[in-house]
Length: 161
Image (tube, rainbow, N blue to C red; front, side, top):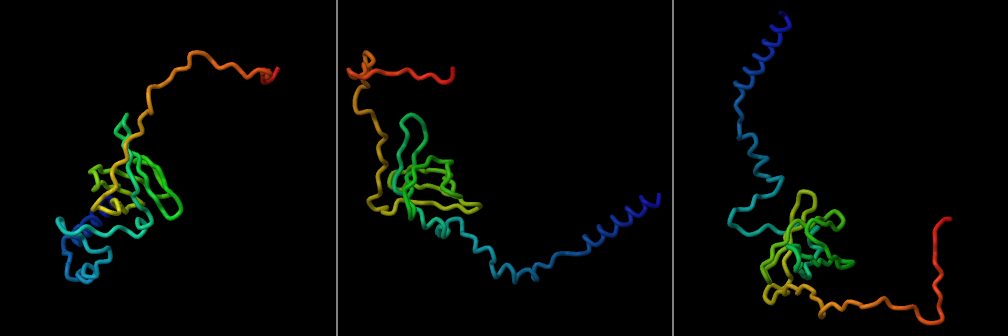
């Protein structure tokens, strides 16, 4: 009985304290004015600049796969070029999405909670999508297995006894 009474009394005190205390937004105005997490972008405003880690990557080309909806992304960083599909990673950077729109195509990269969009460097001319590699001609099927050159004898290899 005393335990139930003490719990009821404690809940009553907490409820009264929460109801009595109204948040005063003026005391938080200083924090909001400093904008510690950056200024939110307007819905129709200019795009936010890419994070610093995205500056090391450059979109070189896109190669659509003719047999599926995958697109091979060609990215270049300071050391080398990377050929990756969406969903694959380069270190801790993940290729999230590819937006195909001709010269205005974009690649969305994610690192942790930050995302960045890469465009082709020269949007005026743009880098065209590279064509998918097609076969050079009809596939030639061998009719018989090639015989080894004369004078050589093949020794059969068997593992174990």
